[in-house]
Amino acid sequence: MCNKKFIEISKKIVADYANEHIDKTDNKSITVDDIYVVWLCKTLQNCKALLSTMLPDGMYYEVTYNGDKNELYLDAYKKLENRCIKVE
Image 1 (cartoon, rainbow, N blue to C red):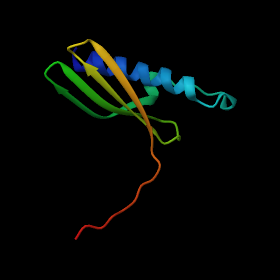
Image 2 (cartoon, helix red, strand yellow):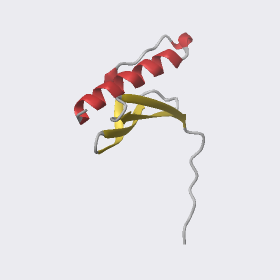
Image 3 (cartoon, helix red, strand yellow):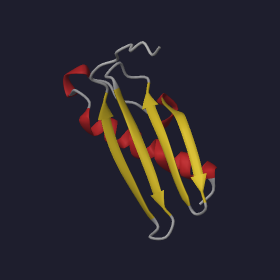
Image 4 (cartoon, rainbow, N blue to C red):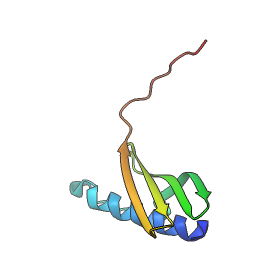
């Protein structure tokens, strides 16, 4: 699968997931245009991308394509904390 197709599919998957889990009382939904790629890697027949949305919910998503099995996997994460740790 080429990067362009992988990104298109990944954005659709993330938009669908986010819309399924969005607070229904907000009366909002997102489209693939509200999704952006933070990081992307392709190794041999496999791809992995980290994506996020314009929603202020602290979520980010990891989509992995297993080229051997022709399967996509979605992991959804929520940022719980951001700490600064000084390294000397």
